[in-house]
Image 1 (cartoon, rainbow, N blue to C red):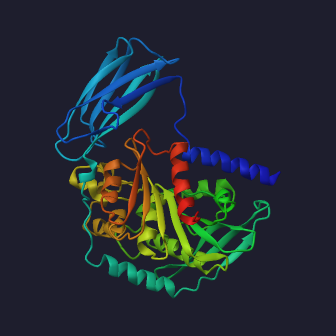
Image 2: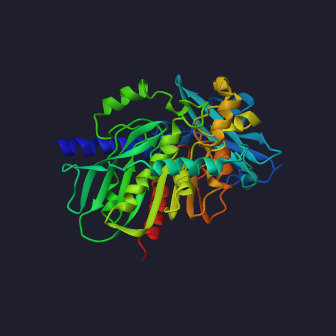
Image 3: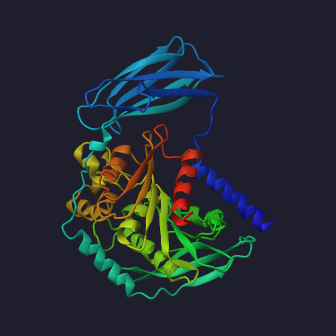
Length: 430
């Protein structure tokens, strides 16, 4: 019964993380007039808006809308859709970037919202963040300090999660932090059959939560390790993480932002390397094939891990966060966690800007040397596409771009399947 409850909880959580937006009675459809949503600089875009009920245009619907560069929508107006549809002049952009149209329809006292985002030569977007002169030196020293810390691995079998072909463990390792150590926790899934296997590190999105491990991939013959980043066990009751997220770990992404050595993410980044230390030490590891994947904060950590750790052979980041975070200071959208936007003016200091540059995904993207598959959409309001393209354009290693223009901070099942199959093809040679 306990196992059934756990799996049900995990299924619900997974649906919250990866599912498309919930279907509503009233649908607001917004789209640019190019099929691929992509334009030349200076080319005009027209946004079509349709409000549907039962699949038919809803007549005499009032809408309000905003149009402008993402996060900086400037044109605001309203209109009544006599026939349930309208075309809006979106104008153009004189530089590379993304132009967004956000629409709210009010029906029977309830608001329904949607958006569409047109891309203007995004392959020309250049990062705003600067590369510290000692960036590589800083992280090499950090990795050297990590290497001095014994791994002290502890594995606890979780019988209720094991399957006929996979053993599941709660794993915890010793990780480095400035002037001390901290534990790193995760869920390790290992094929039961004797043999040598490739390994996949799954790095997490933002937040505080328990983890279930990637059992499905392990059943295909791949060792998987899904880690948390906060130095707490990942098998506790969900209420514990809710409490931590509302108290001790609330706003963790800005902890010690004014000090590059004590910033919260230093031990997080090193923890990803430490997780790989364990994976490659396993007697079941095939000695060669190691990949990393994740979405949002996990997309950022995928790029960071691939850049820091030469043992990684492939990376699959999805809508990566923490990219070009200072974009806001240059008048354009910056990446999550939006630490330099207009609502966080207190962070606009020389010390914090400097620290952020050592942790910006763009600067890690420049260090990547392994093939990657990079997946994102144009409608992402959490990780703005301008910031994600700044990172993508900085990657010089072999890369595949998978665009799902309509997606916001979520993925289609087909997108998940493409990424999963890419990883399987790389890790399990056919």
